[in-house]
Length: 286
Image 1 (cartoon, rainbow, N blue to C red):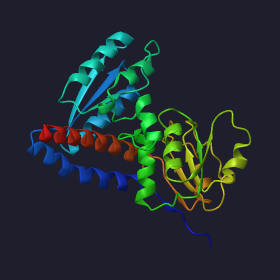
Image 2: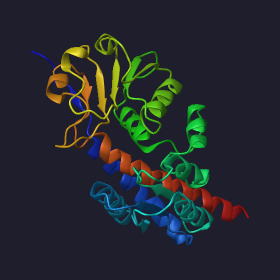
Image 3: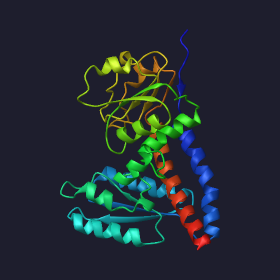
């Protein structure tokens, strides 16, 4: 009889992280500091608006402040940069989140780069990426950080293991590859031009699915006993892997929903609280 895989419960991990943050937020408030995440939404994309609302609700539940800035879709790059600059200069704001995607006429990369490294709690700047790749960054991209948190919570061994990351986006595939490499995994990063992807996945001890295509990774592609972390979230509440088929092969697997997603939001909160704690230490020593 086959052994059932361990389901890596992101809701449980996220709940414990958020519970631990409540006391830290309360301690900051006693010092007169309320951790504040500013979310900037440009345009009227309903999915983006839902995500921003979810993040605001998550902040409220642990006692943080969420400041929402909603700009019209006609906003120019220069106008958006001005708003980000004002948030950079606002000492009551500890983290800045630019909800993406932004309207096509806006230079999204320029907007990301305008966020102060001290407030880049979503890990979107090239400076933040570089620091985290070198192993000393403070605020990694939140979904890669969530994946690593799940790995750590469940004690998944990384050292010497072959990890295959399917996806190379600047806020998911690339940073999680670097983070795994920094933890002594041997990492192969794949993408849409990769040849013989099933053959590569067949050698993977750890699979990170971050390709943005529903049910893309097939069960017959992965080897028996692989640990599978699905960072995809597509229409119909499905991930980037064929869950039922991969479940039959995996030793551990994240569900969708309820896997990486909830932990991603908790990491955003955690990094905002850490930014506020850093400010509190600076004030105490000044």
